[in-house]
Image 1 (cartoon, protein in one colour):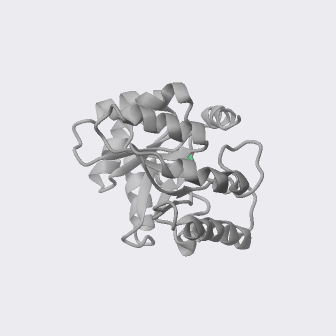
Image 2 (cartoon, protein in one colour):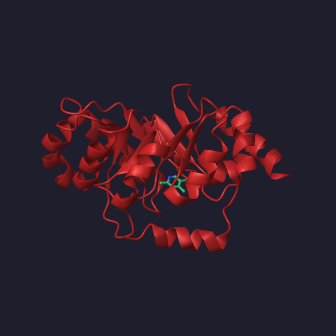
Image 3 (cartoon, helix red, strand yellow):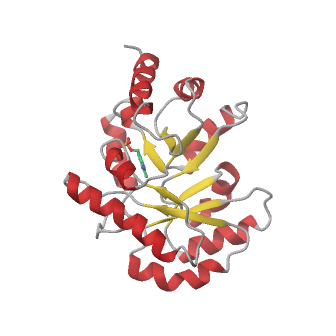
Length: 233
Ligand SMILES: *Cc1c(COP(=O)(O)O)cnc(C)c1O
């Protein structure tokens, strides 16, 4: 099978399982531009990248696709915040008050609305970024004061090695947290679920799922290792 045939086959199978209100964010790290264009031609419109510098040439090369939406899903360093706001309509990985305030300050001068999700770390994991709940709750008053960005939801990444029951519990916790803080922040989006766990995220109420390998196939092993390192603080 060519990569194009495999993508079509995967997408047809996955699409049938996804409720219509759920956005599928096709994660295109290490995926070539030609295959991203093919995904667009199959009907995908939302695309996710986790490194600003890798994403920039792809986003520029696909500027002719008018209704494409780019999502940033990786750890964002504050010196890349401006470029990220210029390139991406959504940032799923806001993991500190300082970053949220910086995005707000930068976006004051930009015309586009910036839609942010707060990345929450529901289980201890030294290799992952994200708010722990006891740190997020006291930051809400300051987050409410941001004027130039919209905080629209929560995002989480499940740690490796959880059982189906544990995944179900974890994803339900994110939705419960959103409901708990919804009277203070307009939380409507839940970005959760990846190739190995998206059915559990859908069952728990995901509104955005982020799919890479189950659409495009395995990423090259060497780059996987690089990526794993890039996720370490
Ligand atoms: C790579 C990545 C994904 C997609 O992962 P797959 O296992 O390939 O589906 C989703 N979310 C984030 C934050 C990622 O870095």
